[in-house]
Amino acid sequence: MSNYFYGTGRRKTSIARVFIKPGSGSIKVNGKSLEEYFERPVLRQIILQPLETLGVVGKYDIYVTVAGGGKTGQSGAIRHGLARALVQIDQNNRKPLKIQGFLTRDPRMVERKKMGKPKARRDSQFSKR
Image (cartoon, rainbow, N blue to C red; front, side, top):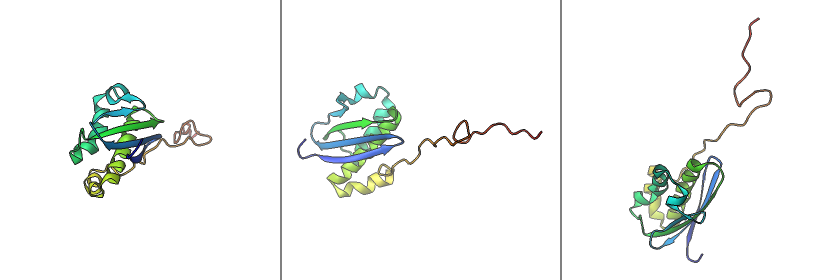
């Protein structure tokens, strides 16, 4: 892949590597088209948000490899990586993307299970007597 820009995106346990270069607007996710990989329109909409914010939909070819988590986490990770790649293209893109919150990694993750408890915080029922 020559003369491309790169951004890494993360959300929950998903990690996306986003490669972007000027082109016709094709988007490939793990070798499949965007519509083929993400059946739900809401998830596709999440991914395209940074492009819509900057008004550059259809001006870049995007290639993504994403792993881990579920489809929702993956779409959030792709959005994060895409925003970071767009900042690499032009530093002036940073402010509008930062205002929309696309450059912030969503830190929420599943809390780990603690020893002696059935779940992360759930405990056995208290008995006074």
